[in-house]
Length: 96
Image 1 (cartoon, rainbow, N blue to C red):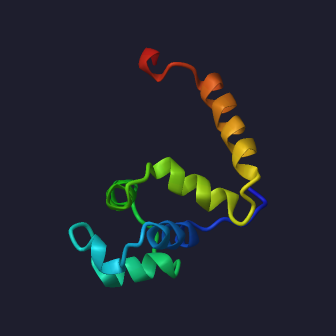
Image 2: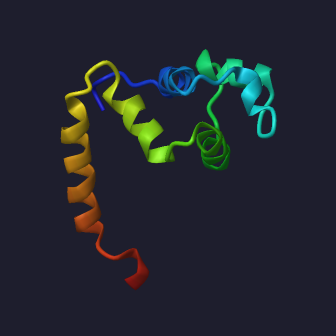
């Protein structure tokens, strides 16, 4: 993907928009770990991402979408349309 994206920036943006401190994640993560994630020094596993999103009250796809659209909110519709097309191409995963 040519555009720059940042999970770290998206994580910090959502956390602050929800009015949460890094300490609010103490049940699933340390403040130090949150800080390293937000400074893009580490990347969370998929399971950890789901736990962090649960604390923030957002779906992990919301966070990933924000990471990929960056500072261009108008790109969200384009990205979601691409995801819909790709899901259609994959078909019903229950039939695999």
